[in-house]
Length: 190
Ligand SMILES: O=C(CO)[C@@H](O)[C@H](O)[C@H](O)[C@H](O)COP(=O)(O)O
Ligand SMILES: [Zn+2]
Image (cartoon, rainbow, N blue to C red; front, side):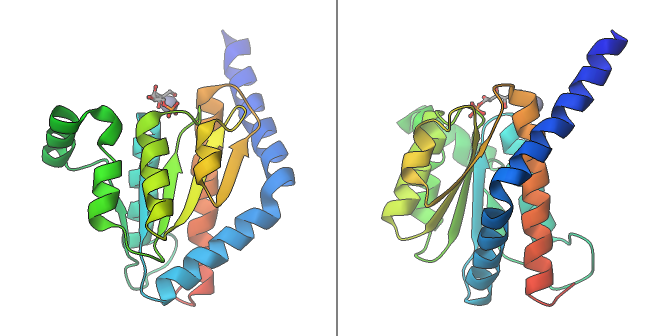
Protein backbone atom coordinates (compact mmCIF):
# COMPACT_ATOMS: atom_id res chain seq x y z
CA UNK A 1 0.00 0.00 0.00
CA UNK A 2 2.90 2.36 0.62
CA UNK A 3 3.79 1.80 -3.03
CA UNK A 4 0.31 2.96 -4.03
CA UNK A 5 0.76 6.18 -2.05
CA UNK A 6 4.15 6.99 -3.56
CA UNK A 7 3.05 6.03 -7.07
CA UNK A 8 0.04 8.38 -6.96
CA UNK A 9 2.15 11.35 -5.91
CA UNK A 10 4.86 10.58 -8.45
CA UNK A 11 2.32 10.18 -11.27
CA UNK A 12 0.62 13.43 -10.30
CA UNK A 13 3.92 15.31 -10.34
CA UNK A 14 5.04 13.70 -13.62
CA UNK A 15 1.73 14.51 -15.36
CA UNK A 16 1.94 18.14 -14.26
CA UNK A 17 5.54 18.49 -15.46
CA UNK A 18 4.66 16.96 -18.85
CA UNK A 19 1.61 19.24 -19.08
CA UNK A 20 3.50 22.46 -18.43
CA UNK A 21 6.10 21.51 -21.06
CA UNK A 22 3.27 21.22 -23.58
CA UNK A 23 1.13 24.18 -22.53
CA UNK A 24 3.12 26.90 -20.70
CA UNK A 25 2.69 29.46 -23.51
CA UNK A 26 -1.00 28.66 -23.99
CA UNK A 27 -1.63 28.97 -20.24
CA UNK A 28 -0.11 32.45 -20.24
CA UNK A 29 -2.05 33.40 -23.39
CA UNK A 30 -5.39 32.26 -21.96
CA UNK A 31 -4.66 33.89 -18.59
CA UNK A 32 -4.05 37.22 -20.34
CA UNK A 33 -7.19 36.76 -22.46
CA UNK A 34 -9.27 36.18 -19.31
CA UNK A 35 -7.78 39.29 -17.71
CA UNK A 36 -8.59 41.38 -20.79
CA UNK A 37 -12.13 39.97 -20.97
CA UNK A 38 -12.75 40.89 -17.33
CA UNK A 39 -11.22 44.35 -17.85
CA UNK A 40 -13.66 44.83 -20.74
CA UNK A 41 -16.66 44.02 -18.52
CA UNK A 42 -17.12 40.34 -19.32
CA UNK A 43 -17.36 37.39 -16.93
CA UNK A 44 -16.05 33.85 -16.51
CA UNK A 45 -18.50 30.91 -16.58
CA UNK A 46 -17.42 27.42 -15.50
CA UNK A 47 -18.95 23.93 -15.29
CA UNK A 48 -18.13 20.21 -15.07
CA UNK A 49 -19.34 16.97 -13.48
CA UNK A 50 -18.32 15.35 -10.18
CA UNK A 51 -14.81 16.37 -9.18
CA UNK A 52 -14.80 18.79 -12.10
CA UNK A 53 -17.93 20.48 -10.68
CA UNK A 54 -15.90 21.06 -7.54
CA UNK A 55 -13.05 22.46 -9.66
CA UNK A 56 -15.46 24.84 -11.43
CA UNK A 57 -16.73 26.11 -8.09
CA UNK A 58 -13.22 26.34 -6.66
CA UNK A 59 -12.00 28.52 -9.53
CA UNK A 60 -15.10 30.77 -9.41
CA UNK A 61 -14.50 31.23 -5.68
CA UNK A 62 -10.87 32.27 -6.28
CA UNK A 63 -12.04 34.99 -8.68
CA UNK A 64 -15.02 36.29 -6.71
CA UNK A 65 -13.13 36.06 -3.43
CA UNK A 66 -9.39 36.32 -3.63
CA UNK A 67 -6.54 34.15 -4.83
CA UNK A 68 -3.53 35.49 -2.95
CA UNK A 69 -4.21 39.11 -2.11
CA UNK A 70 -7.06 41.41 -1.24
CA UNK A 71 -8.49 43.03 -4.34
CA UNK A 72 -11.87 43.78 -5.83
CA UNK A 73 -14.11 40.79 -6.66
CA UNK A 74 -13.91 39.49 -10.22
CA UNK A 75 -17.02 38.26 -12.06
CA UNK A 76 -17.24 34.46 -12.24
CA UNK A 77 -20.00 31.90 -11.88
CA UNK A 78 -20.06 28.09 -11.65
CA UNK A 79 -23.18 26.56 -13.21
CA UNK A 80 -23.06 23.58 -10.82
CA UNK A 81 -24.49 25.04 -7.64
CA UNK A 82 -28.17 25.96 -7.99
CA UNK A 83 -30.01 22.72 -7.21
CA UNK A 84 -33.38 24.16 -8.22
CA UNK A 85 -32.09 25.11 -11.65
CA UNK A 86 -30.14 21.85 -12.05
CA UNK A 87 -33.07 19.62 -11.04
CA UNK A 88 -35.58 21.57 -13.12
CA UNK A 89 -33.40 21.45 -16.22
CA UNK A 90 -32.45 17.80 -15.68
CA UNK A 91 -36.05 16.79 -15.05
CA UNK A 92 -37.67 18.83 -17.81
CA UNK A 93 -35.04 18.88 -20.56
CA UNK A 94 -32.62 16.05 -19.70
CA UNK A 95 -29.27 15.87 -17.95
CA UNK A 96 -27.44 16.72 -21.15
CA UNK A 97 -28.99 20.21 -21.12
CA UNK A 98 -28.22 21.22 -17.51
CA UNK A 99 -25.33 23.51 -18.45
CA UNK A 100 -26.35 24.33 -22.02
CA UNK A 101 -29.59 26.06 -21.01
CA UNK A 102 -27.87 28.01 -18.24
CA UNK A 103 -25.29 29.17 -20.79
CA UNK A 104 -28.11 30.24 -23.10
CA UNK A 105 -29.60 32.26 -20.23
CA UNK A 106 -26.42 33.84 -18.86
CA UNK A 107 -23.66 33.92 -21.47
CA UNK A 108 -22.92 37.17 -23.31
CA UNK A 109 -20.58 37.66 -26.28
CA UNK A 110 -17.05 38.21 -24.94
CA UNK A 111 -17.51 36.08 -21.83
CA UNK A 112 -14.95 33.34 -21.17
CA UNK A 113 -16.60 29.92 -20.78
CA UNK A 114 -14.56 27.08 -19.27
CA UNK A 115 -15.82 23.48 -19.60
CA UNK A 116 -14.02 20.91 -17.46
CA UNK A 117 -14.18 17.20 -18.38
CA UNK A 118 -11.50 14.55 -17.94
CA UNK A 119 -12.88 12.35 -20.72
CA UNK A 120 -13.67 15.28 -22.98
CA UNK A 121 -16.92 13.57 -23.89
CA UNK A 122 -19.50 14.38 -21.20
CA UNK A 123 -22.47 15.51 -23.33
CA UNK A 124 -23.65 18.20 -20.91
CA UNK A 125 -20.22 19.86 -21.01
CA UNK A 126 -19.79 19.47 -24.79
CA UNK A 127 -23.24 20.89 -25.52
CA UNK A 128 -22.80 23.86 -23.19
CA UNK A 129 -19.43 24.78 -24.72
CA UNK A 130 -20.92 24.50 -28.21
CA UNK A 131 -23.74 26.84 -27.18
CA UNK A 132 -21.26 29.32 -25.69
CA UNK A 133 -19.23 29.18 -28.91
CA UNK A 134 -22.37 29.96 -30.93
CA UNK A 135 -23.20 32.87 -28.62
CA UNK A 136 -19.85 34.54 -29.23
CA UNK A 137 -18.06 33.59 -26.04
CA UNK A 138 -14.42 32.60 -25.86
CA UNK A 139 -14.53 28.87 -25.09
CA UNK A 140 -11.87 26.97 -23.14
CA UNK A 141 -11.76 23.19 -22.53
CA UNK A 142 -9.90 21.58 -19.64
CA UNK A 143 -9.76 17.94 -20.75
CA UNK A 144 -7.55 14.83 -20.78
CA UNK A 145 -6.94 11.47 -22.49
CA UNK A 146 -7.20 12.10 -26.24
CA UNK A 147 -9.05 15.41 -25.77
CA UNK A 148 -12.45 14.01 -26.69
CA UNK A 149 -15.28 15.80 -28.46
CA UNK A 150 -14.93 18.95 -26.40
CA UNK A 151 -11.84 20.08 -28.32
CA UNK A 152 -14.05 20.59 -31.39
CA UNK A 153 -16.11 23.28 -29.67
CA UNK A 154 -13.32 25.05 -27.76
CA UNK A 155 -11.20 27.93 -29.01
CA UNK A 156 -8.50 26.83 -26.56
CA UNK A 157 -8.04 23.27 -25.27
CA UNK A 158 -5.81 21.98 -22.50
CA UNK A 159 -5.46 18.19 -22.88
CA UNK A 160 -3.75 16.69 -19.82
CA UNK A 161 -1.51 13.85 -21.07
CA UNK A 162 -2.95 11.08 -18.87
CA UNK A 163 -5.75 8.49 -18.98
CA UNK A 164 -6.23 8.54 -15.17
CA UNK A 165 -9.20 10.71 -14.13
CA UNK A 166 -7.76 11.73 -10.72
CA UNK A 167 -4.38 12.64 -12.22
CA UNK A 168 -6.13 14.72 -14.90
CA UNK A 169 -8.22 16.49 -12.25
CA UNK A 170 -5.13 17.24 -10.15
CA UNK A 171 -3.56 18.92 -13.15
CA UNK A 172 -6.79 20.81 -13.97
CA UNK A 173 -6.93 22.47 -10.57
CA UNK A 174 -3.28 23.52 -10.84
CA UNK A 175 -4.11 25.00 -14.24
CA UNK A 176 -7.07 26.84 -12.68
CA UNK A 177 -4.91 28.22 -9.89
CA UNK A 178 -2.24 29.44 -12.31
CA UNK A 179 -4.84 31.15 -14.52
CA UNK A 180 -6.21 32.93 -11.42
CA UNK A 181 -2.72 34.07 -10.49
CA UNK A 182 -2.09 35.45 -13.99
CA UNK A 183 -5.44 37.28 -13.92
CA UNK A 184 -4.75 38.79 -10.50
CA UNK A 185 -1.27 39.96 -11.51
CA UNK A 186 -2.34 41.27 -14.92
CA UNK A 187 -5.22 43.30 -13.52
CA UNK A 188 -2.78 44.90 -11.10
CA UNK A 189 -5.03 44.06 -8.23
CA UNK A 190 -2.77 41.71 -6.32
O1 LIG B 1 -13.85 12.97 -9.21
C1 LIG B 1 -14.14 11.98 -9.82
C2 LIG B 1 -13.12 10.95 -10.13
O2 LIG B 1 -11.84 11.34 -9.67
C3 LIG B 1 -15.53 11.73 -10.32
O3 LIG B 1 -16.48 12.37 -9.47
C4 LIG B 1 -15.70 12.24 -11.76
O4 LIG B 1 -15.54 13.63 -11.76
C5 LIG B 1 -17.09 11.85 -12.33
O5 LIG B 1 -17.11 10.45 -12.53
C6 LIG B 1 -17.45 12.58 -13.61
O6 LIG B 1 -18.76 12.26 -13.98
C7 LIG B 1 -16.50 12.29 -14.79
O7 LIG B 1 -16.88 13.10 -15.89
P1 LIG B 1 -15.86 13.64 -16.98
O8 LIG B 1 -14.64 14.16 -16.27
O9 LIG B 1 -15.55 12.51 -17.91
O10 LIG B 1 -16.61 14.74 -17.69
ZN1 LIG C 1 -11.87 13.08 -8.30
